[in-house]
Image (cartoon, rainbow over all chains, first blue to last red; front, side, top):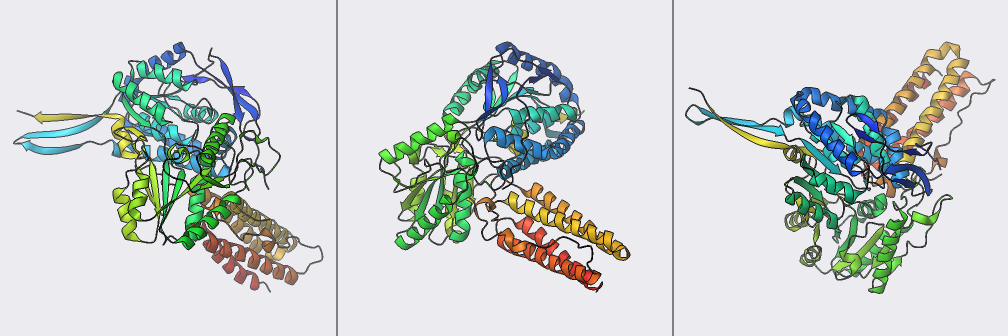
Length: 496
Length: 144
């Protein structure tokens, strides 16, 4: 057992980063707690309306100059940022672990995925190119150019404090916009570290800004501000809907990613030896706190022997998961991010039992490796005999809870999946290509996994989402992100 | 100790590289005549370490399945004697080095095989290192 060194040595008050300066907020301070040790690691201010407005106004002032900066010069800042992120890879990863609770492998994975977005956005000189056609009529040419819009804002969630702001910010600034990031008020320290590196990378003041604070208040201020051209949000469906509505009202572009309830379909021909680890990662990785996490597993077919074999293997693997502090490199699952998050999950477990699901692994009996307070910890929970009408099958739990269901055939499985109002992700585990294709063709979800537990799109693909899991048209990451952060201007030209 | 996570696996591989590098450094100091040969092993160990860390850092994802699938990795199977006794002969020490190489090579091959479907890149790197270790054994034999 090796416990890695803590990355944060003393409790500091986080500051806003506005127009290239570190500014102390006048807002109320809130403690940031390490969910594993339950010790305070930082204090975050809830910035005032004036501070938010100042950030937007400064970014607006800077925008015309940044827009005129050549794409090559803009991405050189990103190249330097990428190098700095690599140099600080381990520290950034450990900060995520201490403020979020995820294991060190998960944090490093998140760091890598975030950096990949910086890498992709560094290709802007090619990616931002428009297109043209000569002779649309005799002697007349037509072409399309992409232009930035101004100032964007990013409202970030707690579950991926490093990666999610990087789904958007590198593309926003590479295309010539300025951005204001509002990190999660529960996990703001990672972004505070990132912006230190942004500062070192030499972005002109005002291009990349951070304003800490309460999600609801700051989001409203940003959405209502006339200088903000667009908003990106990742969080619950309830809030995503509100953001989408408000952005519509105030004429902003929007990417609003909501919640999820992801189904994993296990076919009788699935290779269980390989499927089970993929499912463990899916259901219990990040302590179940990700929008691509598995929530309901459907075992297809009437073969009771296969079903029994699956449940035994699933249960055995889940019960062996080592829970503890993510800085211990032997740990497979960390705590929930907060006490409130744990209480929420406990509420769902109670509800599951009340509604008749059979609990076959009770994660409420907490068993932690190491001497840490139980406050935010839960072990994996597994329910059997779950039906679609139960709350645990319908609502997003966002914790380490797996529901096992059965479907008599493929059509019934698809019907079950479509009872959900969410459409974020779904996976099938099979060795039959025909079923895999049918699944991909019919399932109404934005991210499909075929023998993949976490169908997480790479930086050069958009992060999909359908139904109540996504509100908007263009998605984050890759080419769609570039379209989101630019206007398409068409020029038709004739010379006499 | 049982290894259960990717991080543990990587750290353990690096630990083996460090320990064997120290062993060859000591051999280089003791057997002046063969200093260059032993130091070439130290250089290889350091290169392997960089290669392992680089591969891990470049392919690590938060969705690693290895964290939930590693089985049968017991470090007790790969313990080797990495000290150089004052009165040891060259022949004794070369035999010890050969045993060390054998043990480490076994670790890499076994890990590469078991992690193939979950950590393809790391598995490939481990196979490469195992191959290099095999070639190193031939170099050691030439000292006998």
